[in-house]
Every structure is written in structure tokens, then in C-alpha cells.
Length: 77
Image 1 (cartoon, rainbow, N blue to C red):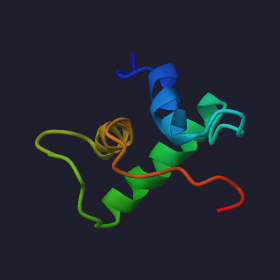
Image 2: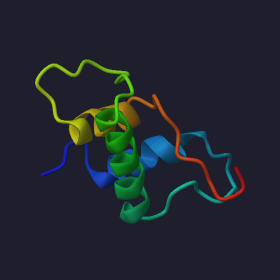
Image 3: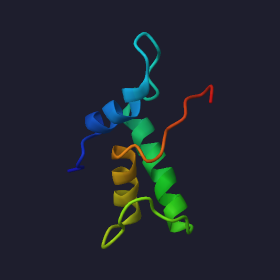
Image 4: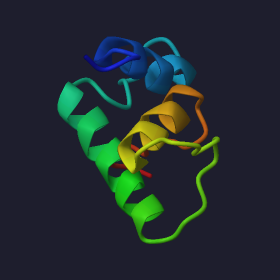
């Protein structure tokens, strides 16, 4: 099971959205795509923004997203 959950990650990503605006993400697919892209960046050599001791790239990407260390950009951005 994924910890934090998809719902928790969606709340973190959408936490900066003003009331009345469209959320940045509204599906688990968006969370999966964003974390997979970040994991590929880590595999390609980008430095992780959290401790990577004993963790796989996808776990690092999920932790980074949960800590709001990278953002998912909407279509307009």
C-alpha cells in the first residue's frame, strides 16, 4: 500500500489552490504521472531533495511530492 495515500497526495498538491479555482490534479493518474516523471529524473542523475538512504527513486519522488518540494503544473503553466 502506498503511504501517503493518493488522496493525501492530491490534498497536498491542491492545497495552494484558491477557493473557486480548478484543482491542479483531480485524479490518481495525475499523481502517478508526476511521481513517475520525477523518479525518471532522479534515475537520470538529478539530485534528490530528500534523504535517499535505502530508498528507490519512486519512493523518493512520492516523499518529495508529499513534502511539497516540487509542483505539478496545470495546463496553463
